Each structure stands twice: as structure tokens, then as C-alpha cells.
Length: 419
Image 1 (tube, rainbow, N blue to C red):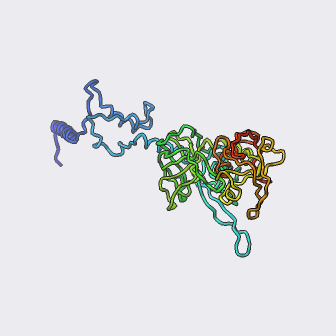
Image 2 (cartoon, rainbow, N blue to C red):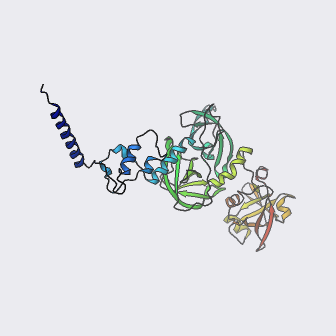
Image 3 (cartoon, helix red, strand yellow):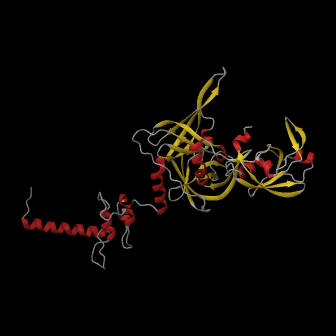
């Protein structure tokens, strides 16, 4: 082994240091000096600080990262360059904050086999938002309709049987309830406000499309105030149209704004193929806020109704009775001494048979209710959707070729329609 003197060792040390400095300079890794204060480049100092367990300044290291134009970030280790755009940060933050508050809902239904025996079978599935720490879940009515059993599947994999607290078929909403495991602190989705939405506003949807749990999609508000007919007698007004991808399994999940507040309940898509084509619809959260309390308290939404028997005009009836209009609702009968009769609404007097029904001709024809044009029975349901029993509404009728305006107090819809 060759030995070196102390002087030789010192020479080699200086030489090694010079080589290291020259090599670092060639690679562009020398610390940049700030000419104004003679200190280190703040970007270099911040990157070193970001590796500490605690940030001395109390700031997000990614927020504080401010690279100088004289600094080449490409030369840094990729692990030190983890950064996101402002939009990406919003998406990530909302998802991490709320995805555990979105549940997967599965159901069981009962079918009848060849031996006329009831047989349980797998039903549909959808999504829901936990809206109360007691275990209340908001979803669509069609997700749990005709269900024999309802199961709430949580983010940690737990499956808990739930109960149906109340349903509102008219707005396609339902509230479920489950008992959370002892000690579990449930995360909830906060209600926002759908009154001031604007077309072009960013929205996010969290749900379980095709049973792929807690999926996030992003889009914008594509349209507002859309009336969507969900059945022959039902139109949901003021629906939110969005291009955020909504697929089977998303139903009942939240539509969120950029602050992570629920502005709608994802309900349906328009799709010739069955998949998402960028036209989805959500029930406005203000509608949900109006009915949720009643669903929890009464199990249903109490709505007002005109206590009369009405018939939607159809071509054969218009021709036979020689009516002056093609659309509207004919008053066949009114309830004796009811609110409608007391307000002056006139029933028909000439009975005719149509199929298995008897229609009384000669009565008033309703054309407008509570400021909304009424052409069909679905329009009447829609016009009275937010009116309570006992409230009075303005009603325009056609009588003898002239328009008459009445103010009619409303009865309880469920009581009237069940008679």
C-alpha cells in the first residue's frame, strides 16, 4: 500500500474540492445568489424546507414555491416538483374531503317464481349523500323504488342495512336512514344554493357509476331551468343540465360546486346509447332542501290540490264537445261544499261515457294555475308542486268563451286523490 504525506493529502483534498465545484457548475447546480440581499435563492431554500416534517412558516410548500426565472426546475429531482394547477387542487381537495360522505346504495327486490313463491333477488344500485351525522342519506326515489331491502355501503367497506324514511316521487327524491357503527364520525355533504347558478360554472359529480365506487367527474353547468318529464303525470321543473359524466350508478349522488357544496342531486341522463353523452340532469338542491325536512318528519311531502275531478283534453273530446281550445283541463266534477266549489269553480252537467269512465261536459276549463300555463295534467302537478294545503292560488279558467280569474284554496292532494 502506498502512503502519502500530510502535505500530499492536503493537496488531494483541495484538488477534489475544486473538481467537485467545477462539476457542479457544469451541471447547473450551484446555488443562485440573490444580488439584492446576497442570500440564497428563495426557491432553493424553500425546496430544502419542504422536506421537513413541519413547515416553519405554516404554509403549504407547494403554495410557497416560487421559482426564479434564473432557476431551471428541470434539473431538480422529479419528486421535488410535485405540483398541481389551481383547478386540479380544487378537484383533489373536494374529492378527498367529501368522497367518504358519498355512499353506494344497493337494493333487494322480491320476485314471484313459477310456484308463485316470493323470491328475493338483487335489485338496482345507485349513490347517495350523507346529509346528517345521525345517518340520514339523500338519494333518488328511483334508486330505492320497489326495494324490499336497502343497503348502505360505506367508504371503509362496511355494508349496513338502512330504512326508507320518506319518498317524494314527484321530485324523484328519497331520504334513507342507517345506524352508523359506534364511535364512527360520519362525514357529510353540505348543502349549497342552486338559486344563483350560472351556465358555464364548474361542477363536480361524485358517485358509483357501474358499481365503480366513489368516482369523480368534472364538467360545467350546461343549462338551467330545464323541465324534464319523468312520467305521464310528472314533470320536474328547473333541473340543472350538466356535461359532467353521469352514468348508471351515479343516480342520487351529489353535484357539487367549486366550494364543495351540493348544488344538485344527479338524477338522469339523456342518452340514445345508454352511456353518458354529456347531457345529464340534476334536481336542484333548493328543491331538496324544501322537501327533506318534511320527508324526515312526515315520510311524505304534503302538497295542495284543487278538490275537483279534472280531465285532460284530448282530440276526440274536443271534437265531440265542440270545445274552443285544444289543451287544458276540463272540470268534470267538484267536491260538494269543497274549496273549489266555494271559490266559484263550475262542474259539468252533461254525462258522457268514454271507455269505462264517465265525463261530465259543460264545466270550466283550467288554462293557468299559479302563474303557470296548464296544458296537461302533468302541468297541474308541476304548478302545484311547491304549494301546501290551505294556501290560495290564482286560477284562470275558460267559461263560455271568456277568461275568468278565481282564487282557490287548496286541499290536501293525498286525501283528494285517494277518494
